[in-house]
Image (cartoon, rainbow, N blue to C red; front, side):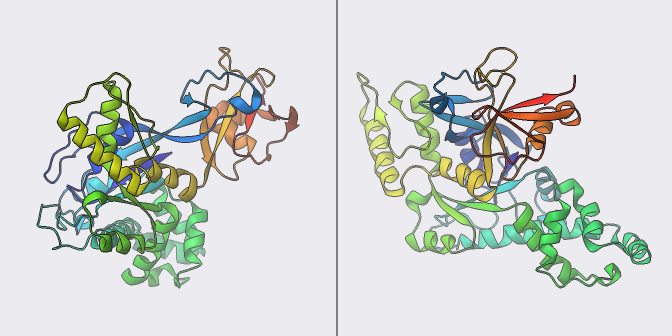
Length: 395
Protein backbone atom coordinates (compact mmCIF):
# COMPACT_ATOMS: atom_id res chain seq x y z
CA UNK A 1 0.00 0.00 0.00
CA UNK A 2 1.46 3.31 -1.10
CA UNK A 3 0.40 6.91 -0.46
CA UNK A 4 1.68 9.64 -2.78
CA UNK A 5 2.59 13.05 -1.35
CA UNK A 6 1.59 15.47 -4.11
CA UNK A 7 1.21 19.17 -4.78
CA UNK A 8 2.83 22.07 -6.59
CA UNK A 9 6.47 22.98 -5.86
CA UNK A 10 7.53 24.75 -2.65
CA UNK A 11 4.48 24.03 -0.47
CA UNK A 12 6.19 21.80 2.10
CA UNK A 13 5.81 18.34 0.55
CA UNK A 14 9.35 17.31 1.44
CA UNK A 15 8.95 18.71 4.95
CA UNK A 16 5.70 16.75 5.33
CA UNK A 17 7.41 13.60 4.04
CA UNK A 18 10.38 14.09 6.36
CA UNK A 19 8.11 14.79 9.32
CA UNK A 20 6.08 11.66 8.62
CA UNK A 21 9.03 9.35 8.03
CA UNK A 22 12.03 11.16 9.58
CA UNK A 23 13.83 10.30 6.33
CA UNK A 24 16.70 12.65 5.40
CA UNK A 25 15.49 14.48 2.27
CA UNK A 26 16.46 17.84 0.83
CA UNK A 27 14.24 20.66 2.07
CA UNK A 28 14.61 24.12 0.58
CA UNK A 29 12.57 27.24 -0.13
CA UNK A 30 12.58 27.03 -3.92
CA UNK A 31 10.68 25.05 -6.60
CA UNK A 32 11.64 21.50 -7.61
CA UNK A 33 13.62 20.64 -4.48
CA UNK A 34 12.58 17.04 -5.15
CA UNK A 35 13.48 15.65 -8.58
CA UNK A 36 13.86 11.93 -7.97
CA UNK A 37 11.02 10.54 -5.83
CA UNK A 38 11.74 9.96 -2.14
CA UNK A 39 10.41 6.74 -0.64
CA UNK A 40 9.99 6.12 3.05
CA UNK A 41 7.93 4.36 5.69
CA UNK A 42 5.48 6.18 7.93
CA UNK A 43 3.31 4.60 10.60
CA UNK A 44 -0.38 4.76 11.45
CA UNK A 45 -1.82 3.92 14.86
CA UNK A 46 -4.17 1.03 15.51
CA UNK A 47 -5.13 -0.96 18.60
CA UNK A 48 -2.80 -3.93 19.09
CA UNK A 49 -4.50 -7.21 20.18
CA UNK A 50 -1.75 -7.83 22.75
CA UNK A 51 -3.68 -6.47 25.72
CA UNK A 52 -6.92 -8.18 24.71
CA UNK A 53 -5.03 -11.48 24.47
CA UNK A 54 -3.00 -10.89 27.64
CA UNK A 55 0.41 -11.22 25.97
CA UNK A 56 3.51 -9.07 25.53
CA UNK A 57 4.04 -8.73 21.78
CA UNK A 58 7.40 -8.76 20.03
CA UNK A 59 6.71 -6.86 16.82
CA UNK A 60 8.76 -7.40 13.67
CA UNK A 61 7.45 -5.09 10.94
CA UNK A 62 6.09 -2.42 13.28
CA UNK A 63 6.27 -1.10 16.84
CA UNK A 64 3.87 -1.33 19.76
CA UNK A 65 3.70 1.59 22.21
CA UNK A 66 1.44 1.10 25.24
CA UNK A 67 -0.85 -1.24 23.34
CA UNK A 68 -0.95 0.90 20.20
CA UNK A 69 0.52 -0.79 17.11
CA UNK A 70 2.31 1.48 14.64
CA UNK A 71 1.48 -0.12 11.28
CA UNK A 72 3.80 0.67 8.34
CA UNK A 73 2.68 2.65 5.29
CA UNK A 74 4.89 3.44 2.29
CA UNK A 75 5.04 7.11 1.35
CA UNK A 76 6.21 8.50 -1.98
CA UNK A 77 7.26 12.16 -2.23
CA UNK A 78 7.47 13.23 -5.86
CA UNK A 79 8.53 16.35 -7.75
CA UNK A 80 6.18 19.34 -7.62
CA UNK A 81 3.41 19.53 -10.20
CA UNK A 82 2.77 22.68 -12.24
CA UNK A 83 -0.13 23.44 -14.63
CA UNK A 84 0.06 21.57 -17.96
CA UNK A 85 2.37 18.91 -16.53
CA UNK A 86 0.33 16.37 -18.50
CA UNK A 87 1.76 18.02 -21.62
CA UNK A 88 5.31 17.83 -20.25
CA UNK A 89 5.63 21.22 -18.53
CA UNK A 90 7.98 21.38 -15.53
CA UNK A 91 8.96 17.82 -14.69
CA UNK A 92 5.67 16.88 -16.30
CA UNK A 93 5.07 13.26 -17.12
CA UNK A 94 7.95 12.13 -14.91
CA UNK A 95 6.04 13.43 -11.87
CA UNK A 96 2.89 11.72 -13.00
CA UNK A 97 4.55 8.43 -13.90
CA UNK A 98 6.07 8.28 -10.41
CA UNK A 99 2.52 8.17 -9.03
CA UNK A 100 1.28 5.17 -11.03
CA UNK A 101 1.12 2.70 -8.12
CA UNK A 102 -0.17 5.07 -5.43
CA UNK A 103 -3.43 3.99 -3.81
CA UNK A 104 -4.25 7.47 -2.52
CA UNK A 105 -2.81 10.97 -2.45
CA UNK A 106 -2.12 13.50 0.27
CA UNK A 107 -2.31 16.84 -1.52
CA UNK A 108 -0.07 19.23 0.40
CA UNK A 109 -1.29 22.81 -0.11
CA UNK A 110 0.28 26.05 1.11
CA UNK A 111 -2.82 27.26 2.95
CA UNK A 112 -1.16 30.60 3.72
CA UNK A 113 -1.33 31.53 0.02
CA UNK A 114 2.30 32.71 -0.06
CA UNK A 115 3.31 30.64 -3.11
CA UNK A 116 1.89 31.16 -6.59
CA UNK A 117 0.74 28.46 -9.02
CA UNK A 118 4.35 27.83 -10.11
CA UNK A 119 5.59 27.51 -6.51
CA UNK A 120 7.29 30.92 -6.37
CA UNK A 121 7.18 32.87 -3.09
CA UNK A 122 4.82 35.85 -3.18
CA UNK A 123 3.27 38.31 -0.71
CA UNK A 124 0.37 37.01 1.41
CA UNK A 125 -3.15 37.52 0.07
CA UNK A 126 -2.26 37.47 -3.62
CA UNK A 127 -3.15 33.84 -4.29
CA UNK A 128 -6.12 31.58 -3.51
CA UNK A 129 -4.73 28.15 -2.40
CA UNK A 130 -7.95 26.38 -3.38
CA UNK A 131 -6.73 26.79 -6.97
CA UNK A 132 -3.99 24.28 -6.14
CA UNK A 133 -6.59 21.59 -5.47
CA UNK A 134 -8.55 22.39 -8.64
CA UNK A 135 -5.55 22.27 -10.96
CA UNK A 136 -4.03 19.13 -9.41
CA UNK A 137 -7.27 17.19 -9.77
CA UNK A 138 -7.51 18.27 -13.40
CA UNK A 139 -3.86 17.48 -14.21
CA UNK A 140 -4.20 13.91 -13.01
CA UNK A 141 -7.47 13.43 -14.90
CA UNK A 142 -5.87 14.82 -18.09
CA UNK A 143 -2.89 12.50 -17.62
CA UNK A 144 -5.24 9.51 -17.31
CA UNK A 145 -7.12 10.64 -20.41
CA UNK A 146 -3.94 10.76 -22.47
CA UNK A 147 -2.99 7.26 -21.34
CA UNK A 148 -6.39 5.99 -22.49
CA UNK A 149 -6.12 7.84 -25.80
CA UNK A 150 -2.67 6.46 -26.60
CA UNK A 151 -3.39 3.83 -29.26
CA UNK A 152 -7.13 3.94 -28.54
CA UNK A 153 -8.26 4.24 -32.20
CA UNK A 154 -6.93 0.82 -33.14
CA UNK A 155 -8.19 -0.79 -29.93
CA UNK A 156 -11.60 0.89 -30.31
CA UNK A 157 -12.10 -0.47 -33.84
CA UNK A 158 -11.19 -3.99 -32.72
CA UNK A 159 -13.41 -3.69 -29.65
CA UNK A 160 -16.35 -2.50 -31.74
CA UNK A 161 -16.05 -5.55 -34.00
CA UNK A 162 -15.68 -7.92 -31.02
CA UNK A 163 -18.35 -6.26 -28.89
CA UNK A 164 -15.96 -5.70 -25.98
CA UNK A 165 -17.33 -3.97 -22.86
CA UNK A 166 -16.09 -0.41 -22.15
CA UNK A 167 -14.67 -1.39 -18.75
CA UNK A 168 -12.54 -4.09 -20.35
CA UNK A 169 -11.03 -1.65 -22.85
CA UNK A 170 -10.43 1.00 -20.20
CA UNK A 171 -8.92 -1.39 -17.69
CA UNK A 172 -6.47 -2.57 -20.33
CA UNK A 173 -5.33 1.03 -20.86
CA UNK A 174 -5.17 1.90 -17.14
CA UNK A 175 -3.79 -1.37 -15.74
CA UNK A 176 -0.39 0.25 -15.18
CA UNK A 177 -2.00 2.82 -12.87
CA UNK A 178 -3.24 0.19 -10.41
CA UNK A 179 -6.86 0.87 -11.46
CA UNK A 180 -9.20 -2.11 -11.25
CA UNK A 181 -12.06 -3.06 -13.54
CA UNK A 182 -14.54 -2.76 -10.65
CA UNK A 183 -13.40 0.83 -10.03
CA UNK A 184 -13.90 1.61 -13.72
CA UNK A 185 -17.37 0.04 -13.64
CA UNK A 186 -18.25 2.27 -10.70
CA UNK A 187 -17.04 5.35 -12.58
CA UNK A 188 -19.02 4.37 -15.69
CA UNK A 189 -22.24 4.47 -13.67
CA UNK A 190 -21.75 8.23 -13.35
CA UNK A 191 -20.63 8.93 -16.93
CA UNK A 192 -22.68 8.92 -20.13
CA UNK A 193 -20.09 7.07 -22.22
CA UNK A 194 -21.17 5.88 -25.70
CA UNK A 195 -21.20 2.09 -26.05
CA UNK A 196 -19.27 2.48 -29.31
CA UNK A 197 -15.64 3.25 -28.25
CA UNK A 198 -14.91 4.90 -31.61
CA UNK A 199 -17.29 7.71 -30.51
CA UNK A 200 -15.48 8.54 -27.26
CA UNK A 201 -14.46 12.22 -27.39
CA UNK A 202 -12.00 14.21 -25.25
CA UNK A 203 -14.61 15.92 -23.06
CA UNK A 204 -16.42 12.68 -22.23
CA UNK A 205 -13.16 10.91 -21.46
CA UNK A 206 -12.05 13.76 -19.18
CA UNK A 207 -15.31 13.54 -17.25
CA UNK A 208 -14.84 9.80 -16.93
CA UNK A 209 -11.19 10.11 -15.85
CA UNK A 210 -12.15 12.67 -13.22
CA UNK A 211 -14.48 10.10 -11.70
CA UNK A 212 -11.97 7.25 -12.07
CA UNK A 213 -9.38 9.31 -10.20
CA UNK A 214 -11.83 10.08 -7.38
CA UNK A 215 -12.56 6.37 -6.95
CA UNK A 216 -9.15 4.80 -7.59
CA UNK A 217 -6.84 7.45 -6.14
CA UNK A 218 -8.74 9.47 -3.52
CA UNK A 219 -7.18 12.52 -1.87
CA UNK A 220 -6.74 14.07 1.54
CA UNK A 221 -5.89 17.79 1.56
CA UNK A 222 -3.07 18.72 3.96
CA UNK A 223 -3.68 22.42 4.63
CA UNK A 224 -0.02 23.11 5.38
CA UNK A 225 1.31 26.25 7.08
CA UNK A 226 -2.06 26.44 8.83
CA UNK A 227 -0.48 28.45 11.65
CA UNK A 228 0.01 31.45 9.32
CA UNK A 229 -3.00 30.88 7.06
CA UNK A 230 -6.03 33.22 7.03
CA UNK A 231 -9.16 31.54 8.34
CA UNK A 232 -10.97 32.16 5.06
CA UNK A 233 -8.35 30.09 3.23
CA UNK A 234 -8.81 27.15 5.60
CA UNK A 235 -12.60 27.40 5.36
CA UNK A 236 -12.48 27.39 1.55
CA UNK A 237 -10.16 24.38 1.42
CA UNK A 238 -12.40 22.49 3.84
CA UNK A 239 -15.28 22.93 1.40
CA UNK A 240 -13.46 21.47 -1.63
CA UNK A 241 -15.13 18.05 -1.30
CA UNK A 242 -12.10 16.11 -0.02
CA UNK A 243 -11.14 15.43 3.58
CA UNK A 244 -9.03 18.45 4.65
CA UNK A 245 -6.75 18.68 7.69
CA UNK A 246 -4.95 21.77 9.11
CA UNK A 247 -1.27 20.77 9.04
CA UNK A 248 1.91 22.05 10.68
CA UNK A 249 4.59 19.97 8.97
CA UNK A 250 7.50 22.14 10.15
CA UNK A 251 6.30 21.81 13.74
CA UNK A 252 5.99 18.02 13.46
CA UNK A 253 9.51 17.76 12.05
CA UNK A 254 10.93 20.06 14.75
CA UNK A 255 9.22 18.07 17.52
CA UNK A 256 10.51 14.75 16.23
CA UNK A 257 14.02 16.16 16.05
CA UNK A 258 13.70 17.55 19.59
CA UNK A 259 12.45 14.19 20.82
CA UNK A 260 15.31 12.39 19.07
CA UNK A 261 17.74 14.81 20.76
CA UNK A 262 16.30 13.91 24.16
CA UNK A 263 14.80 17.35 24.82
CA UNK A 264 11.10 16.46 24.89
CA UNK A 265 8.68 13.57 25.17
CA UNK A 266 6.41 13.47 22.13
CA UNK A 267 4.27 10.74 20.61
CA UNK A 268 3.31 11.47 16.97
CA UNK A 269 -0.38 12.24 16.74
CA UNK A 270 -0.66 13.63 20.26
CA UNK A 271 -1.86 17.19 20.70
CA UNK A 272 0.83 18.06 23.24
CA UNK A 273 4.39 17.32 24.29
CA UNK A 274 6.41 17.82 27.46
CA UNK A 275 9.95 18.93 28.17
CA UNK A 276 11.97 16.13 29.74
CA UNK A 277 12.73 16.45 33.42
CA UNK A 278 16.12 18.03 34.06
CA UNK A 279 16.50 19.47 30.54
CA UNK A 280 17.64 23.09 30.41
CA UNK A 281 16.38 25.01 27.39
CA UNK A 282 17.74 28.31 26.12
CA UNK A 283 15.47 31.29 25.45
CA UNK A 284 15.22 30.59 21.72
CA UNK A 285 14.20 26.96 22.33
CA UNK A 286 11.64 27.99 24.95
CA UNK A 287 10.08 30.58 22.65
CA UNK A 288 9.89 28.12 19.74
CA UNK A 289 8.37 25.33 21.85
CA UNK A 290 5.85 27.72 23.42
CA UNK A 291 4.75 28.85 19.95
CA UNK A 292 4.41 25.26 18.74
CA UNK A 293 2.50 24.21 21.86
CA UNK A 294 0.01 27.05 21.38
CA UNK A 295 -0.63 26.20 17.72
CA UNK A 296 -0.99 22.49 18.55
CA UNK A 297 -3.67 23.33 21.12
CA UNK A 298 -5.44 25.42 18.47
CA UNK A 299 -5.39 22.65 15.84
CA UNK A 300 -5.42 19.55 18.11
CA UNK A 301 -1.91 18.56 17.05
CA UNK A 302 0.23 19.07 13.97
CA UNK A 303 -2.16 17.27 11.61
CA UNK A 304 0.54 15.13 9.98
CA UNK A 305 -0.49 11.92 11.71
CA UNK A 306 -4.16 12.80 11.22
CA UNK A 307 -3.63 13.14 7.45
CA UNK A 308 -2.00 9.71 7.29
CA UNK A 309 -4.62 8.00 9.42
CA UNK A 310 -7.58 9.65 7.69
CA UNK A 311 -6.11 8.53 4.38
CA UNK A 312 -5.52 4.92 5.50
CA UNK A 313 -8.51 4.22 7.72
CA UNK A 314 -11.23 6.59 6.48
CA UNK A 315 -10.50 7.14 2.78
CA UNK A 316 -9.00 3.75 1.84
CA UNK A 317 -10.98 1.94 4.57
CA UNK A 318 -8.16 -0.41 5.55
CA UNK A 319 -8.13 -2.67 8.61
CA UNK A 320 -5.26 -4.21 10.58
CA UNK A 321 -4.78 -8.00 10.73
CA UNK A 322 -2.05 -10.15 12.27
CA UNK A 323 -0.95 -13.41 10.59
CA UNK A 324 0.68 -16.03 12.88
CA UNK A 325 1.90 -19.63 12.57
CA UNK A 326 0.86 -20.81 16.06
CA UNK A 327 -2.71 -19.85 16.97
CA UNK A 328 -2.33 -20.87 20.62
CA UNK A 329 0.77 -18.76 21.32
CA UNK A 330 0.14 -16.12 18.60
CA UNK A 331 3.68 -16.58 17.30
CA UNK A 332 5.53 -16.88 14.00
CA UNK A 333 8.19 -19.43 13.02
CA UNK A 334 10.77 -17.62 15.17
CA UNK A 335 8.59 -17.48 18.28
CA UNK A 336 7.84 -13.77 17.94
CA UNK A 337 4.44 -12.84 19.40
CA UNK A 338 2.08 -10.95 17.05
CA UNK A 339 5.08 -10.15 14.85
CA UNK A 340 3.51 -8.52 11.80
CA UNK A 341 0.66 -6.08 11.30
CA UNK A 342 -0.78 -5.97 7.77
CA UNK A 343 -3.15 -3.31 6.48
CA UNK A 344 -5.74 -4.79 4.10
CA UNK A 345 -8.95 -3.45 2.50
CA UNK A 346 -12.09 -3.98 4.53
CA UNK A 347 -13.90 -6.97 3.07
CA UNK A 348 -10.68 -8.93 2.44
CA UNK A 349 -10.86 -12.67 3.01
CA UNK A 350 -8.62 -15.22 4.72
CA UNK A 351 -7.37 -16.30 1.30
CA UNK A 352 -6.60 -12.68 0.37
CA UNK A 353 -4.44 -12.51 3.50
CA UNK A 354 -2.68 -15.73 2.52
CA UNK A 355 -1.70 -14.21 -0.82
CA UNK A 356 -0.60 -11.03 0.94
CA UNK A 357 1.77 -13.01 3.18
CA UNK A 358 3.16 -15.12 0.32
CA UNK A 359 1.92 -16.15 -3.14
CA UNK A 360 2.62 -19.81 -2.37
CA UNK A 361 0.45 -19.66 0.77
CA UNK A 362 -2.44 -18.38 -1.34
CA UNK A 363 -1.94 -20.98 -4.07
CA UNK A 364 -1.81 -23.85 -1.53
CA UNK A 365 -4.44 -22.47 0.87
CA UNK A 366 -6.45 -25.12 2.75
CA UNK A 367 -8.08 -23.26 5.61
CA UNK A 368 -7.44 -20.64 8.27
CA UNK A 369 -7.84 -20.45 12.02
CA UNK A 370 -9.15 -17.43 13.90
CA UNK A 371 -6.63 -17.36 16.75
CA UNK A 372 -8.91 -15.32 19.02
CA UNK A 373 -11.84 -17.77 18.83
CA UNK A 374 -9.79 -20.87 17.87
CA UNK A 375 -12.41 -21.57 15.19
CA UNK A 376 -11.49 -22.94 11.76
CA UNK A 377 -12.62 -20.68 8.93
CA UNK A 378 -12.68 -21.06 5.15
CA UNK A 379 -11.15 -19.15 2.28
CA UNK A 380 -14.12 -16.78 2.09
CA UNK A 381 -13.99 -15.78 5.76
CA UNK A 382 -14.20 -11.97 5.86
CA UNK A 383 -11.45 -10.54 8.02
CA UNK A 384 -12.31 -8.20 10.88
CA UNK A 385 -10.20 -5.35 12.23
CA UNK A 386 -7.72 -6.73 14.75
CA UNK A 387 -8.06 -10.37 13.66
CA UNK A 388 -5.19 -12.74 14.46
CA UNK A 389 -5.15 -15.48 11.82
CA UNK A 390 -3.20 -18.67 11.14
CA UNK A 391 -3.07 -19.77 7.49
CA UNK A 392 -2.98 -23.53 6.88
CA UNK A 393 -1.60 -24.54 3.49
CA UNK A 394 -0.31 -27.64 1.69
CA UNK A 395 3.43 -28.10 2.01
